Length: 203
Image 1 (cartoon, helix red, strand yellow):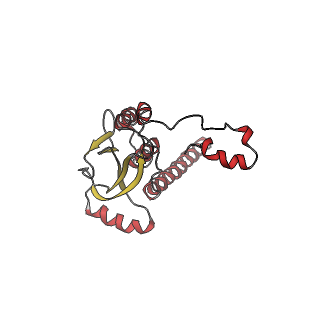
Image 2 (cartoon, helix red, strand yellow):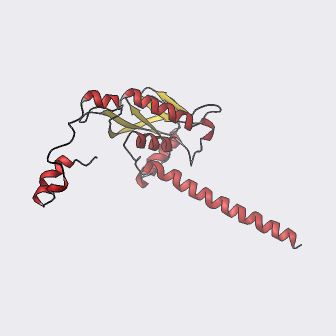
Image 3 (cartoon, helix red, strand yellow):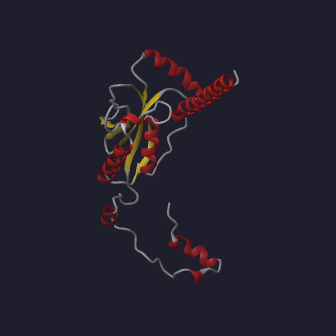
């Protein structure tokens, strides 16, 4: 939130700071037309942003595992962000962008579970679409990685660019833990390979 000199002025004057501040507010409140010209909604309004949560795949086994993992505040989830009536997410694709859109709560590849309100964005629909267009170029489908670059990472970044977020921790924790294990396994594999090479030299 921005700091308002005008709002602070009475307090400042009472503490002897009046000479350092203007005697009146320098700018009038922004009009709706001025907000629109900057790609934002007028203050006090905004478009609702909703996080839709799915169980990964339609598999009953995965659903059961997620119910158990939910007690540990984690699980294997697909997430998507709804803004201005459209649901946006990210997934693997052989070619082109991995960003895709579908009607809210209707991603066919996964089983819908529930939704979380993430607040309101001040960005207008055309501004959001332009933002999505840029992200579509950045988030290529063949960059998808189940632990390091997945739908949850995309949702988290989209929320950030909408001026909201972050994504609740439980949707990132499984990926973070898996990535850490992957790093550890890779390091162990590298050490093992080096030892084998060293042993071969001294034979």
